[in-house]
Image (cartoon, rainbow, N blue to C red; front, side, top):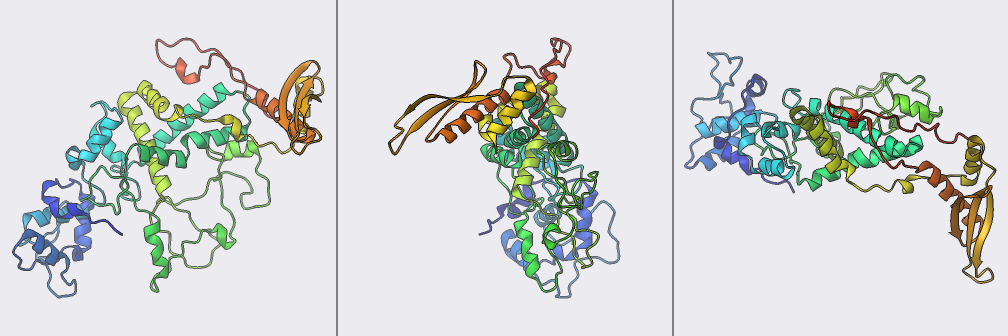
Length: 448
């Protein structure tokens, strides 16, 4: 059920947005302003005004005088409240002046413990997605780009300096767990930010303004529309990934870890060609006339861009130190069990290769203790030794299971090594910072 937007009837208390791009919408689409009929109350006037037949023949425009460049053409007999409402409805997102009158925005500003150094108007801009307002001067695209790079930098240096021997695949998984779209969506909910049903100038600026993808998929059932939302990959067309990736159209080619680190994003995911609205673009080899995907987005992508934009705003208005503290309080403070992200296919073989590379003795599995061998539930405890050093220990219902768990424990003990005094490169920035000391750089994971 679609919620009613009651702010449509309170447009007189909101100030219009002073920019010409929103006002031209009124001139290009005159049906958004229909002639007003007689009514007793302003609410009845507004209802009759919106229900007016657009094909009635009455023209509310004065054709003798052309429209000005910076002002909309509005009928003179329209009440002032409806004129203000028409100006707001013509805007793709709330005006800047409405930010100071929003209780939801002020509550969010206080909830995040922001000081007056970060203006509330900037926080309102962080809530405007590119799908709601395509003007880069009013959406959060530029702030989101800066915030995404800061999140990637701070997260990667924290993971690599804390676990220098971590495999690249696990690093990608940890990056996704810390600053991935699902995590940033959860952070948006924890901050108490709600998504608007439909963006517009009359909406409270405390809501996240975006056009959802689900609301536009109904167009495919229209007989007059040739909109086809099916991705190009599902149609059998080449998988266009990575703008600089060689042989990107070959699906059977293996994407190694080194290839992912060079050509893919910070999460190890393949990049795709996208149009200016953020949607996937069809392949050039397609002969079917397909309409480009409407400028919509998913909830996860909109929430991710919002959290990234907030990080960029903190960095610009309050500096590096405040941005890093914001990252530690909202991102790095979350508990992440990195040990559960490992998935070994043949741990005994990997352990043998690791010992051979590091110059250790060949690993040997020995039974440490057992109980109930002849019962239905036996328990075996097996240890893996390299010479006299015990590398790992595991328990299982069989000898093979216990040996495998012991090998997994030995591999995790090697890869999850963490130094006692962890410092990251960003700690050495600033005039009063301590000199940087190089950290351990491991040779990398086992290549079998």
